[in-house]
Image 1 (cartoon, rainbow, N blue to C red):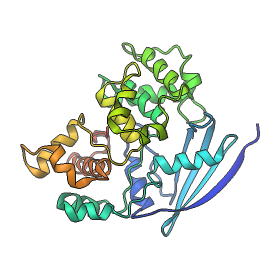
Image 2 (tube, rainbow, N blue to C red):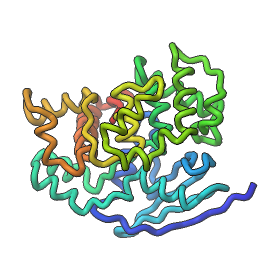
Image 3 (cartoon, one colour):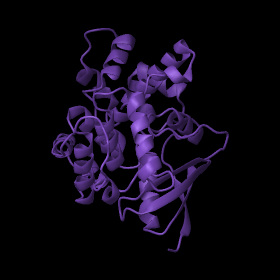
Image 4 (tube, rainbow, N blue to C red):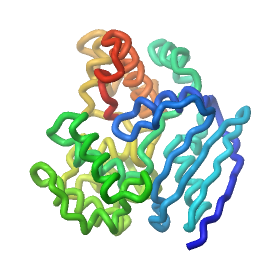
Length: 295
């Protein structure tokens, strides 16, 4: 097996701060990066193109991102996947205008300068997390996920679909059955990120819910944080609804309120959720009691 390295320099259009995005990801349950003082993002994943393991290191130089990928598979596809799960492939030059239309978002942009939502490595990983976290506490689900990585993963990477499909796991309820369905869907291309992104959001959500074990909340998680779609409004995230009430008052209709967020409704929702977690963390005074992110 021959491992190769490839480095690409990509111009990022619109505001971006690797420091802010890295800080966000370090608190992103379940796949949080380990906190460190390094100026780059490092992570490991399987590419959707060929399901080969890839290591990546991302750094920032001005408005450009340097993306280094190492592996034995399709490295160009790996670079594209890194850009997607870090939202670096989004032309965000109009994102500041959302803040000009909504002072609540303007405040979020000021508090989280240059944040780009960091998602799961793939819709497949997001779908697996949706299954694992269903009907149990987030911390328990995170332990289950970490145990799967340690026992069956590849040097820190969540198992590839071909591996997950055949695992006999001791999990609560029907989670093993549902994970097998997720793996099958990924291998059949039904969780392909670009296909989900390019489809109408309602159609994409319906397609995702055809996978056994994925309901409305899981489908939104897969589309918004797996495919990293920039303009999908979550309707099944109760923490976002609570934040809207806190900031804007009760009785506000989320669809009407979010109309001025287009074409960055997902980004606006993630910013509000991130600020809610930041505030919760400050109140609790303990990292261990932080409210975990969902969408």
